[in-house]
Amino acid sequence: MRIRITFSKQGALRYTGHLDLHTLLERAARRASLPLAYSQGFHPTPKIQLASALPLGFSSRAEVMDMWLTTDCALPQVRADLQAALPRDIQILDIQQVDDRSPALQTQLIAAEYEATIPEEFASNLTSRLSALLGASSLPRVRRGKAYDLRPLIESLEAAPADGSGKMRMSMRLTAREGATGRPEEVLSALDIPPESVRVERTRLIFQG
Image (cartoon, rainbow, N blue to C red; front, side, top):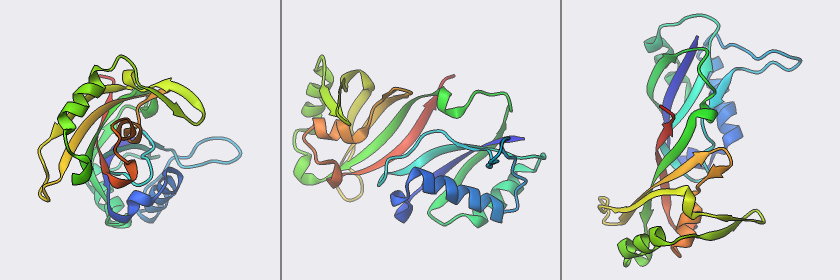
């Protein structure tokens, strides 16, 4: 039985890295006494697959993982047992059964959406700056010593209404294909906004079909 779980990641867990998150989810599944399926080989591991690594410091309300179980289980009970074993900063939003033969999540991911809360000191003329960025024919950047063009990785950018605190927000949709992944912090840097000053949340993962 293969189940797909959508969950949020908030609070202090924003600073939990991808590998540590994977370990946390695995331990929670064991505490919940779920009948986890294991990989084959000399070092069997639980078959748990996360769609995409979330950058450290980002919150999310749209993380997706697949988990394989050895027996069919009632989804409402799986959800209740797993939620009870998880820290409160992770909330299960949806759970459903999917075809065991479906492609790996990572191979189906094509884009991700984010929302950035911009501090007032960097919010002036945000709409016009976004337009200028989108109008650029190329946006040369360097990541890990390699040059690349950021512009093709940006699918959309727009200013959003201010939140309850009055801070300006910005929504962005970036490609998330293997070898062509747009990163919100690079977009912020291209706008001359220090990424460390911005609160970023992933709001949606978009899959083929």
